[in-house]
Length: 195
Image: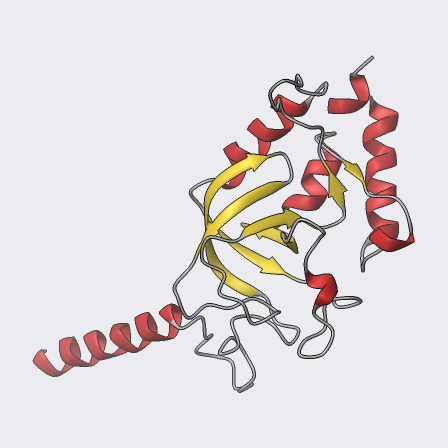
């Protein structure tokens, strides 16, 4: 019995170390997660510290966790890739129609929770092509997944955001996002019900 308990606690310790390092114990591919998620792999178990509005939040991560541009992720602002939520109030400007609802949606879904960040493989390709991993405001651009749901898509589907338009803003899922947005627009969901 004592050997069984010792074996179980050793196995749990190995599992805990593997989880803390971001490695999947069943994955034999040596390229996973030592790099903090870049080189095509997602960055997993990132804590959403605070939602700022309907498409931007601040993350908390260990000091060794790095983004696709090799910068530490702790304290970074992340922007949901491919979408644009209505603005919340910024003194002296009032909130856009549906700005508060959009921010509340994202806060309710992911604030204080662990998410996975995935980067656009068409533009954010470390180690050489990292300039487009961030926007003009130095926010990391990512597809954000929580419990198997891509929050970028869910926001569009429920009418909490619209797609970005223009060649500069294209990404892997541009066509898919346009279709999702059209469905929300047709249904008059969220911001599409604004006058």
